[in-house]
Image (tube, rainbow, N blue to C red; front, side, top):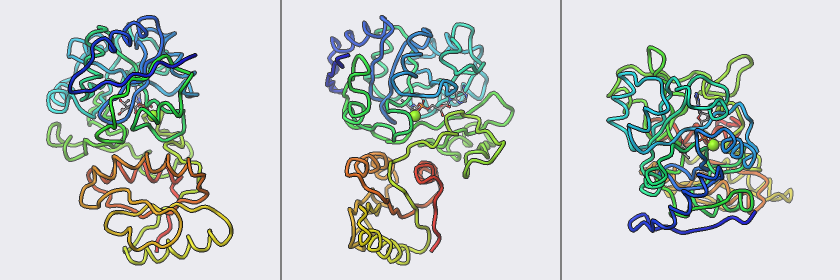
Length: 350
Ligand code: TXA
Ligand code: MG
């Protein structure tokens, strides 16, 4: 299959490109498009055969449900059984934005989209290209991150191309995304709302709107036998680079010393080493491919670059990644959640 590739300026959207995408979606085929979090791989959410193509092209396990993207409250009502009060409050406060809400699904939503579940994940992305695409196609779009399953999510159209060129019908390039890690997922079908995946919208931000919020305990550490995360996708070793990744935790100068020593040792043995530093500490490192992932004073700069850095290390065939750890509150909590998963929870305290 030849993948059509089109650039779109989100300040001056070329509608003819979106019409081309609409026609492809209506035929039951796949279009990758930008959102504010990561690129999504879209298909008609109400067409089971189209959804099946998503699983096939990504190599995604079929029990891992898709997020349904919408552009209006009217579209939400098409796919959910009802809108609980808490959900309504969250929609009003955070949409369009990086928050996915779990609802009981309407009958019209096929189990092929929800991975066999009776619930459906819904989100209204804060990206004009995505919103306009849904509006002109009058379609709710199922879209997981547009990466090959198991690889870091794509934050540019080039990342999508690297993974899915020749396997999908179209890629819409809307430039680099603004957030860089996937949306927060919250389940409001239980009495106390529960975060199933941390993201840019933090626990505190959610609690300001709906009161007490819990975090699914299954996602706070390595997978435990018999404990299943409520978001099926969180059980997979996700976001993972090919290299052996270790995070070093402790006081900053000690961490730098330890990483320098370990990097020197690996290089001596003939391995390629990548070091994840920050703007504040990058000068402390002497060995390997040293990359600053952003500033500790600006967590968004870190979330935006995380997957890009992991992909770049893959491209360079790095054998070992040695990373600093970051503050784990607010957005930092979501960043560390993804970093720890990428590292398979390999942490060394120094
Ligand atoms: O930011 C995002 O959410 C991006 C962009 C493209 O919107 N999408 C994304 O999709 O990250 P994906 O497929 O990579 O992750 C979806 C997550 C998975 O962990 C999945 O298990 C969970 O959402 N999920 C989907 N439907 C669910 C449901 N009904 N109940 C619980 N978890 C669900
Ligand atoms: Mg994903």
